[in-house]
Every structure is written in C-alpha cells, then in structure tokens.
Image (cartoon, helix red, strand yellow):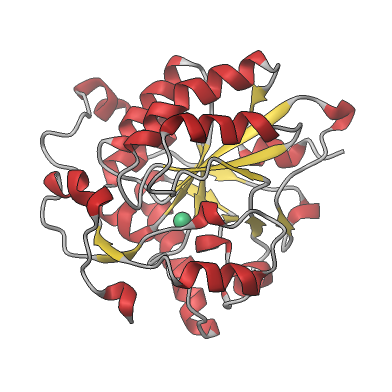
Length: 291
Ligand SMILES: [Zn+2]
C-alpha cells in the first residue's frame, strides 16, 4: 500500500531531525479535512489522496521532560467512563443544558516528542483540560509523554494502533482498538471507552467494532484544519473561533507530523474562546452535560 512507503515530506523535515531511529511506519492523519456530517464514503475518498507514511519519532534524551514532571508521571488508575446514553453511539457535539458555553479540545495522533510537551505546558499555564486520542504505535515509542498527559489531568481516548483508514475485518479492527487500549492501561493506568476513528472514517469496520463493545465513537463538530500543510497558524485560530458553539468538540493534532503551527495557534485558540465566554471541559465531562 502506498502509505507504507517511507515518504518524508517538507513538513516533516524538521521532525526528522529529532527522530531517534524508531522505524515504525505510521499513516499520518488527515482528520481535519473531514468535517463532521459529510458522508463516510466522501471522507474515505478525500483521505485516500492524502495518505503518506512517516516514522514515529521517539522521545530522546534531549526532549523537554524535566525531572519534576517525570516524578509526577507515575501510573495511576483512572477510568474515563461515559454515560449509558453514549455507549455504542457516535457523537460529534452535545447540547449542554442551559446552552452553557462549554467546549472540548481534542488532540489527536500523539504522544509526540516536543509538540505534545509544548501543548501540555500551554494547557497547564491556562488551566485547561483537553482530551488526547492516542495512537498505539506512538504511545509505544513515547510512554513517558503519555504518563505526563495523564498526570496533568487530561482525558485519554483510543485512536487505534496503526492509524489505518482502510477497510478491515473484525479481527483486525478488534486488534487495532484493543491492543491500543491495553497499552494505554499498562502505560498510564487509564481505562477508556472513548474511541476516535482515524480520519473520521466510519465505514471501514473500526467504528462498527467499537460500537459493538460500547465505546463512544467521538467525532468532532469543528476543526482547526491543522493538517493543511499550507495554512498558517492564524488560520487554525480563525477556524476554531469562527464556529465555536456550546457543546462543540474541536479537532486539532499534537502528532502525526510537524505540529509546530498547532502549538503556535493553541494559546490564541484558548484566549479567544475564553474571551467568547467558553469554559473548557474534557470529552467525558462534556458527555455528562448532555441535557
Ligand atoms: Zn488521527
């Protein structure tokens, strides 16, 4: 398949410098090109042209994990449970009671060296909790970063092991999801029933398996479009601020490529939404707010 071919594009050159040699193929996300509501078939077609492969970089000794963070990044036991009404259901937004201005930032494809840590720092400075959808391969390469995500109070979801878009049989879909959940638990102590299909593809077998196991299939209602290789970070900010609504789930990325522009956009996204009166909640918290 074409997306297994090593193909490091311009946007990945900077990332390549910090790759420490873990040769794991990883089909990069194109989640944000598929706004919720478009048919799955259309999404699949759009995505096919965007597929390419890179290596999952591993945290190196020069990564920015300080001693204090490491000591606080111990394995805990946490369960991100979901209301029964969302078990086996697909959700892209909730309708909060009293139309309360709450919003959930969702951050996909990590943990990733450098960018995840920078985003954690920004989130912590602004006292914002987000929801990270982890890719199994990336988690295997960067376990310490995932522990830090959990230690700082963010929610965790499952984003499959390989980040494949292709159609797969039930055994493969099961493996993609359960293998990732097992490593999330083993690494962080977190049990999660939040699942996000790579690329938002709902018809390739993954979402069907997840629903059969009572996961909530978590899509998004607005995207930063931060996988657009040409857009500037200001555009990501505009994309999010323009369409914010109470109960929205916002899509952005910390991994799967060079996400420096997302890091740049994050402080303004947070301050802009705060100015609009929004309060940040995790996806599990948001699901509890459905009226
Ligand atoms: Zn993704």
